[in-house]
Image (cartoon, rainbow over all chains, first blue to last red; front, side):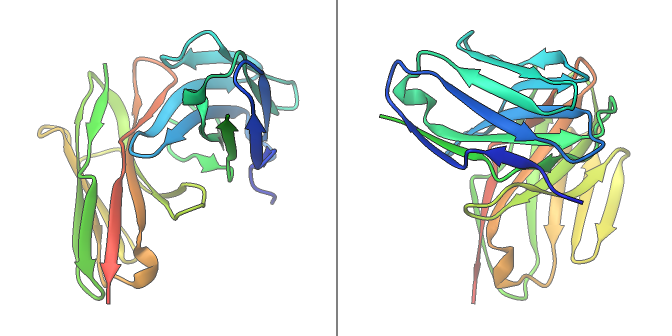
Length: 114
Length: 110
């Protein structure tokens, strides 16, 4: 079956702009989580969605938002971009159980803010 | 809160055995997972420990000790292709959130 698809793969934006990233999970997976990855910081949790509901949110400012659609596809939006938002944004899909033992990651979207 | 600590870098020789440690501080979690990420690639799942003890999957093994708040990933018969970053992660019982460590960069030398 197809893996997790993230689009676009690369993006260059200017400070102050906004951006929307997309994630299509594995068919049958109802949970999508988003992470920000920067060198030396590992994967920082942004949010987790299940059946169109946000189940948890990480410690990021309100400029970071997301949503999930009825087909489980998810988008995240970052408004008023700052230079520090430059990072690799990864989404992970899973079946969505409470224990969520295994997540499948997409290749990520590399966002560069100039 | 939850936090996981891993060494930032480990270097080992091809054919050797290497252990990557993960210590954590969390009020409760379901289990400890390990992921591998090659440069430019996506993290991929390696193993999961729900209970204390050793889980073996081919050349890779993972261990968990809840009483010591400690786990490790053991890689045997190292190959050059094992050069990658390795992340431990926990799924907290306090909410729907999986937290990752900062990652350990493994360099395998010939």
